[in-house]
Image 1 (cartoon, rainbow, N blue to C red):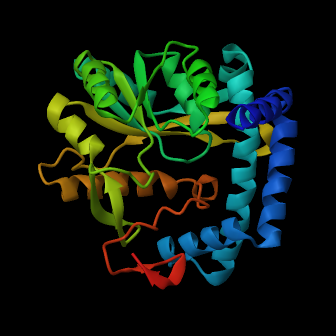
Image 2 (cartoon, rainbow, N blue to C red):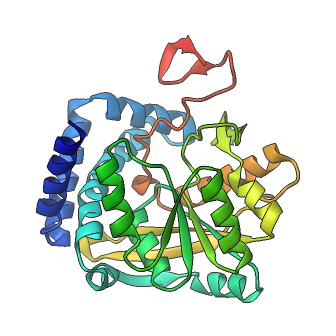
Length: 301
């Protein structure tokens, strides 16, 4: 059954990967808007996240942001096959502008490694390709349930030499090695972490389970940390790579303080392009024991 699922997924990726960017974004946008209009689980999760995380917005603004967010998520879903199936040069040609790359060069010139935080904002696959084309880089990933798809994912993400490492002990040791050698480690910082390397810290004001991996890597390697994303430009005109400073405190000796700084770093870039953030993800589902689950108010965590 897993092989059948893989062949179905691979077939879809190849078909979608044959599309031009404009067509992929057009189809993805309208699929996202259809999902929003139907009001299913993704719409409910998006509405809940925006209501909790951005209470300063009016009801009308939250409504519009929910709609825009699902349109952008649809575009991301149809862009990813392009990033995986297109030649690398064609993907990189989509980058029309950059901002803050001098921060990366300055960080690496210090002789220390660099942790690049890349939240689920804009097109994170393109951001990964861009930085792996310029620097010695390793990226942390969680293996999918289908083994064959994992092999495919490693191949396409690593075709510029980027090294993919699992989030296990061996993988973390490899990340530390890359950082100590002065390389770059890419991490998606806004997932609800598994295992014991986590702490509860505020994310847009709500205490949620947050990874402490970044904090530990900084303490063990002295690495610098920055935040990046590939912003989708309007009208199908491509993307802009943005790099900005992380909030201070990511390497704090107190893991909760470090996790809080990590979440603030994510919040900072999300506010730069909130409609391109993946609000459809249940980021707030793991809260301290006894707290209300925001997605299922009749349940406690």
